[in-house]
Image 1 (cartoon, rainbow, N blue to C red):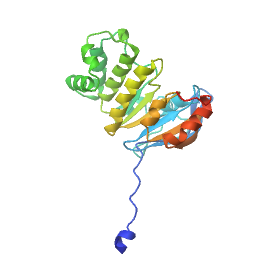
Image 2: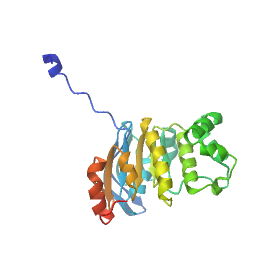
Image 3: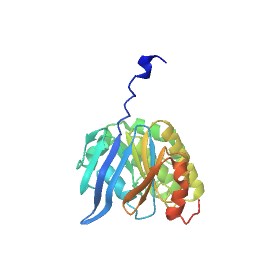
Image 4: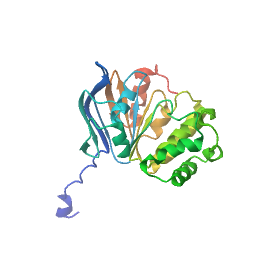
Length: 248
């Protein structure tokens, strides 16, 4: 190693694509988040885990612009976007898959996918991307979405989100109400999506499958992120925090 190489400056760390800084937020006069700080780096999968009522969905609400912080700041790609509308953030590439899937049950699969054209993407391209990622939906494209299985509805919600080619994907309780075998299948899709380099912030309660996909995990309790680190290192803390010491 030459002296020049030895004295070369270290590369600058990548700028977060999404960042919450000391955020307090909630509903009305009641704060649910009490100083949440979180950074999502380019191409990173961040798993935010904790029990029901910990503040995970509220965190996603702030990140997607649906909930304005009481104090603190929201940054996207280094730009302070605190107070920006959820519509503007969606157009900037922040895409939320909400708890409960957020599909239109009385519309067909194809009609649900057409909703993803609001960004200007051609409908044919939306359909192609969706069916390439989730081939099962091709056979269901004329079926009313409300008659799909729970797993297929979640696939539709994911397909619609990915069709917009988001910069950041926010996923709220992917596993909710689904059988373990379906959850395994959905998380295999998440694994492939993550491998493409998309930045993902996902919140869950009891699903250990995400620990094998995430680059970093955080444990949220009582509106605060108590610990962050490598997912494997936090597995035991997760169990003792709110699973009674039992892994799924």
